[in-house]
Amino acid sequence: MKVLRTPDECFEALPGYDFIPHYTEVPDGEGGALRIHHLDAGPRDGSIVLCMHGQPTWSYLYRHMIPILTAAGLRVLAPDLVGFGRSDKPDRREDYSYQRQVDWMLAWLQQNDFREVTLVGQDWGGLIGLRLVAADPERFDRIVVANSGLPMPAGVTEEFAQAVHRYRAEAPTPTQEQVIEAMWDSDPTRPDRSFAVWQKWTWETEDLPIADFVTRAIDGRDLTHEESAAYGAPFPDPRFKMGPRAMPSQVPTLPDDPSVPANRRAWEFFSESKIPLLCAFSDNDPVSNGVSQILQKLIPGAQGQPHREIQGGGHFLQEGRGQELAEAIIGFIRAS
Image: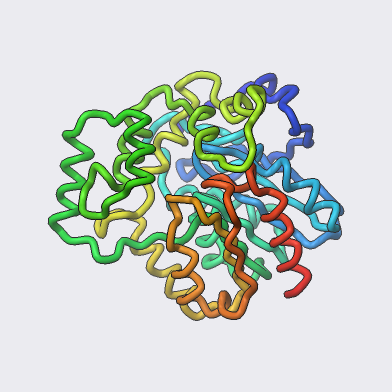
C-alpha cells in the first residue's frame, strides 16, 4: 500500500489548534503499517470522550469543544481517520472501504487500550464509531450520535438500484451547486436528487474543494479565511484527497453495497443494546434528517434519554453549535 503523509509544516499556526500530536501505528491489512494521529487533552484520569469526525473534515472540527469538555474534567481524544488530518493517506481508491476504516480504528482503540469511553460520532465518525461499539462494546460506557447514524438501505427497489448504477456510470459529473441542490431538495425516486449525486461528485472531482464545501455546510458562525483554509491544510495537493473522495461511495445506500451485511450485524447488536445513547442532532441538517427518530425508536439504550434537537448548526454543528453540543455531552455524562 502506497501511503502519503502530509508534511508537518502544513499544520503550523492553524487558528485554535495548538494541540500536541500523538501517533499510533496499526496494520494496514496488506503487511504494512499506517500511522494514525490523535489529540489527547484534559486530565489523564478524566472520563474519556472520544470525538470522531467525518468526511471531509478532521480533528480540527472539535477545537472549540475540546476546551469546554476538558474544563468539565473530561479527557478528550480526537483521532484523525486514515486519509484525513495528520493521519496517513493511502493513495488509491481501492485502499479505502467502510470495513477497513473500522478495522484501522478498532486496532487504534485496542492498541491504546482506551476504556470507559463516551463515543461522540458525527458524520462518518458515527458510521465508524457505532461499528466500533458493536465490535468491542465492553470499552464503551455511553454513545452520543450527532448528525450521523448506522445506514441500512430500506425499501430500495431493484429498479431504483439499477437507475443509481446507471447514473453513477453514465451521467456527467455534477457541479457543486447541483450537489447542494440535491441535498436540500432530495427526491428518493430520482438518482439525480439522491445521495448518489454527492458520491459521484466527490469521486469524479480530483481536486475536491474541501475547505469551501465545509464552509458552506456550517450554520451559526462565519469562519475566518484562516479557519476555512485549515480544513484544507491536510490536503496540500490533489494526491492527498483520495480519502475524502473515496469514502462517500462506501456509504451503504443500495442492497448490494458490500458493507450491508456488517451493518446488519451491528444493528442486531444495537437492537438489544442498553448502552446509554444520546441523540444530539441539528434541526437543519439535510444529510441526517429523520435519523434521530430511528435511533431513538429502535435502540433500547436510547429510550428515556434527554435527546437534544439543536437549533441551527448545519451538518458540521461542532463549528456553529459547539457550545450546545459540548454542554449536551457533559450533561449526559454527569447524569448517566
